[in-house]
Image (cartoon, rainbow, N blue to C red; front, side, top):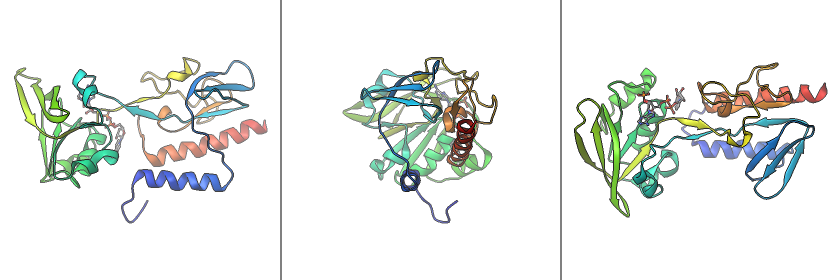
Length: 256
Ligand code: NAP
């Protein structure tokens, strides 16, 4: 850990620099499809380049889930965000809401208190799913107010967000809350679409691992690390740990 608070993106940059120093080549691209039936494996990218490899580690992570409201799409980047670390700064002295009741929502809400004057946490039930320590921090924070048993039905504004419409899950009454921004923190989905079913997934849609070694997948020679194979812990430190395991598994795989 770090004695002084650091930001995730900075940590990522440092890790990348370290990898470059020991000879890693970075190529930024989007993998659209893979072929695992023959060796070498193939990974086809957006830029037209096809990568051939004897083995592959999938570490494509998971991405934020959205509420799927029409009005949400309209305001993405104009008051609707799924990343307080990225966008919190733009809400200095403003009123914002965080939607969700898990650890991500608690973390986002606490982070936003550094900038916003008031933070609402809107949750669809009457209790949080988050760990007790995170809940306690939120519930005891003077800038945070929790709105229980409400769902967001619509986001209003003219150019940028000015209010949201809420529905009470118990009596279906609606109400309006004036604010400047909404942070959606309702979980993540693993980035597995490009695999097109070639690798076995678990019941939550994450890559299933542990077939022969810890990070092995259903396809021999294909390994997975980080959030794409982990719906439970999803921490930077656990992702880094499985990354290390995958690298060691690959080394042994190539040796054999
Ligand atoms: P999560 O634990 O799955 O929580 C998602 C929350 O969003 C739940 O409270 C859920 O409500 C709510 N939700 C889901 N769909 C919704 C919808 N359509 N409308 C309104 N609300 C909706 O996800 P997470 O918070 O991203 O956390 C995922 C994992 O990462 C957890 O294991 C968590 O502990 C870990 N994590 C840890 C930390 C940390 O330790 N610092 C930080 C972030 C994440 P219900 O409760 O009613 O289902």
